[in-house]
Length: 299
Ligand code: FDA
Image (cartoon, rainbow, N blue to C red; front, side, top):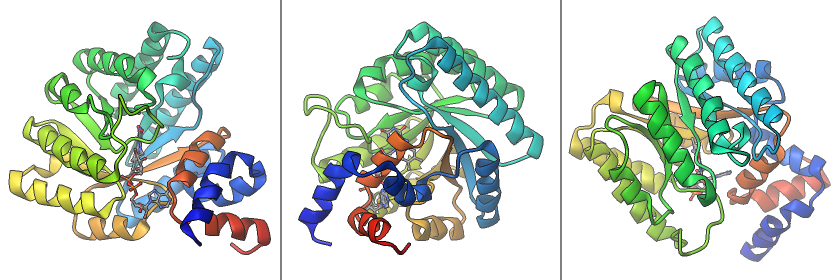
């Protein structure tokens, strides 16, 4: 597919009927129900991978919706513990009320962290758009210092990320990703190679500071750069892991697993799959081909 056609499909994704998007996007989502996600975790365990479960949903505007999402996470943690699965959870602050009130989101995330601690599990706080960064880091800092069992995400495209690393509590757990939201240039680097360079710089700072680091990328250049850093700095196995999204680059996943690295797959599930899937499809270099196939038949 030509680059122009692919660009047009990416721009036009919101105009494509939902059922067609759904056919293409299902590779990124385990299913609608917790049972679907638990089955996927079992399949990943068969490959040697561990998982983090995300209950799909974001930007809630009512406190009772945020409470229902919080309850859902508490149930997920109980189900993981009951079945003895190698998985933890990832939460989006806006799905737990951040856009309503920071204290509300803080209390909801704390409830999930306390539940995780009771199962000796772990909560990763995903990072959303720049309007949420300060509050998310504040919530993380407070919960990490008071409870542990929680970590945060930093985005290599943000100009502030190197400073944010300096402000982390000691022995933090950080997932480093490139960043997915569309941010203005005063906040974010846009050029592909600049984001890569900042990623490797940030990664080195995180490792050197002794934090526990999740290298979250499918970019083979960055994976190789991370492996070189791990070697050069002698980063112990319990201070790092790789992370990838469900449905993306299975061969790279297998390469890392075969080399004995811990690899965690992000497994989203739930009924609210549309916004997450649109973001994933925009990043898929093959999106145009998949969409054309979904419209005209085939797999
Ligand atoms: P890049 O986008 O350059 O992709 C590298 C290669 O991977 C592509 O060339 C392609 O081959 C393949 N690829 C990537 N995406 C694909 C797709 N959707 N379908 C098919 N192939 C694809 N972001 C954020 O802002 N906040 C967060 O909390 C998180 N959390 C998170 C958790 C985990 C486990 C991962 C892996 C990623 C995130 N992200 C995120 C998303 C992240 O910021 C980023 O948008 C994506 O990982 C894509 O960036 P890559 O580093 O993979 O590079």
